[in-house]
Length: 568
Figure 1: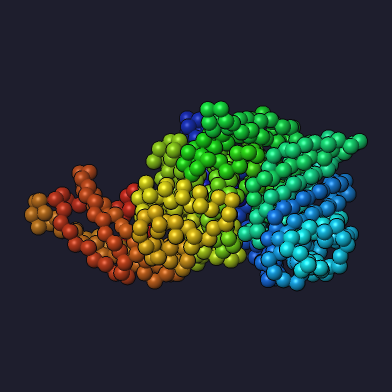
Figure 2: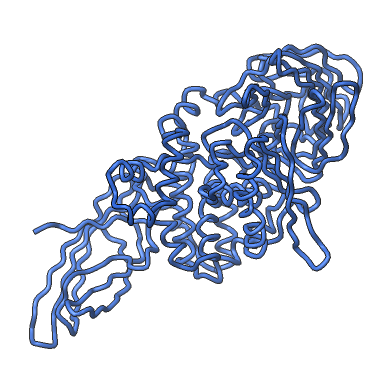
């Protein structure tokens, strides 16, 4: 998921009268600022509101859910946009590990018409977030069919939405993190991946889209049913539905001499020409990431993008990203959004988190992938400029188990910075070997932060407990180092320099930091010194052979830390 922020500085900049020459120099940035002004956006407090106030994880997972393994879902949805209702029939093939009953997540906003176990009617009980099915202990493998109807309650960011685009109905889902069960019964643990068939029925003028590969279209009178087949394991929060009067166009991703995959796009009619320009980045990024991480994980299905009405960003539904209509401009303003969501096909969809405590493994990885893409495309300067845009203090927040900050900048941007620092901690070659090994080992599975650390240590042969402890598990915010710079002269050729450093941050007592310090001379000279800063206070003494002017810490921008000079 990618949530865009307002470019307030750019908006303020444009509000000032500019000379004509500057207008043309900065025209692309100014147009982007105007686009944000016109369409609006989101701030962090809004994100926290959605997650904190719904208390989404409270009593959501029951112990009984861990006693089953879902093998396959068959979802049949009939959509009635005018009435804002659905009729659903979900069949769940389940391997029963142990237990006396089957528990599935299913919000009580929908009316259950019948429940069958192995095609026989059975009893059931419900609470606000679950349905409990009787008679499940008689077989190791069972088929549960639940028939239901009503108006789905749209929770979170909009788990099931009936909307309109220019008075034409648009239906879509966005179930992250735990809202799939507002519209179909499921085991909503991200670890219980399954295959699926999704059948979507709407009026014949609508195009209906889901994950996987289109297996068929059936027309029955004025109704049309699309059948999408998902052969790769998928977590329930990534199962999606889009239905609108879409215009369809496609591109192709060539990944071998005689091998290619369709890249399919579904947009509102008024955005066709703009989308053709904006969506070009997808094939380029598919090539970059396939070479960098390993082949695209869903080659036998597709990659695609579907336009929807969520105006806060985009969502990485497996094989079919949802993109808010505000982010189709025809000016390639939002390449970072498209690149981010595509990266999720590796990090989040193929390799999925074991629990929501590990969400940085999804969002941090996708965010750093933006920087890696621009580095591959335009060089190191693009890498650094992208990372500096994501620099922050993240005060009072830690990366692992972020609680209500599930979709906060700490998860995205600090997560990206942790990977950036890890890259320099282990070396460039080791870093990309780590990514490839991590992807290959956990593809179509689930991984935890501990699993990722184990891969890092196996590849490098280094213990990384200190790194993971301070940056991921325990450290809140970032290191803040206050320093004094003192210089003197002994002779015309020897200049003693003293640098006093003190860690003053809240949230973690003492970080162990690999620091590069650059002393600069008044005539452009420079010399670099590397050291480990692992104490609260440290004093460095050195001699330089030129008259020093100042010092710069971390000149290559490899460290997430704030350096503050003590003013005279």
